[in-house]
Length: 359
Image (cartoon, rainbow, N blue to C red):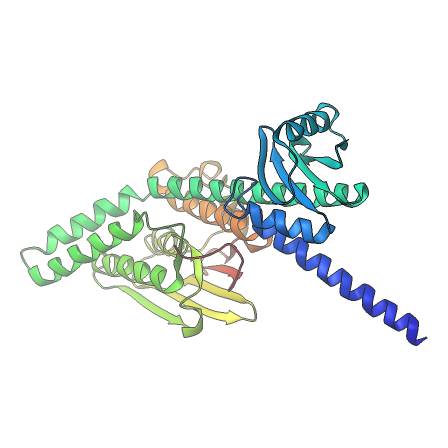
């Protein structure tokens, strides 16, 4: 029995080593075959296979190697043989296994001194890593395109009203006008910042505060603002321009149509591994079906909302899509609302996630 336990422990240890190596190889290939860490991936593959030499190649030839290498003319002949039928090929003691990424031939993994079945399994690992890396880059491009779209949709309605409010206060209250003009400049600077795709929750809240101060002046101070934020989530990285569009939607579509005073509450807290941010208003609310249509990107036109009023709907759909692109489909916006009962929009994102960093 002790011998069986020893063998099981050895097998478990070997499995852990292989899984760790697989994860590290995936990280090394995060930028593709031509990334800065491709040579590191080749070295890890050589150790994993126990090979005398390993070579990574694209369709044009070798891109990274570790250990022994065949002669240049032998490399070309070996790769051509593997690429011709997209099957493993052997030549002069070397074996090459093609890399099929999303069904397309993308290159080859070649080695000397390794079993062919092990090499084929390693090639499959490399192909999957390259496929996942390509998907991550595609998701990042989509998120960046959505962010550019959102910036292009910064509400001209708000810009016009903010400038009108500032202009109206220049004579009766020049100090307030000067402060509001500074807030307006800060708002524009942040909204069109090119610093990166992510900001801290603290940065987003500063932009929200600036926006709400401008709106408070426009509402003749009838707008009540409450911000409750747990300190531990302030440094959390969040996609740029996530909170502010939600707050703008609360003001424009919840409070502008409500007579008398209105309030907006922005709160945030940690919930285990999640960062939770809630934006709640006591405005006119809406039918839950309309909220679902808004997140689907079809709410405004279907409900006959005039074009100049549709930005909030587009903004929420844009934020929802970007969150799902970055974090996965389970991390989209949640809207709780009913006619006459205000609206609460909830964001739940991981507090820590690989690949989500501040520039």
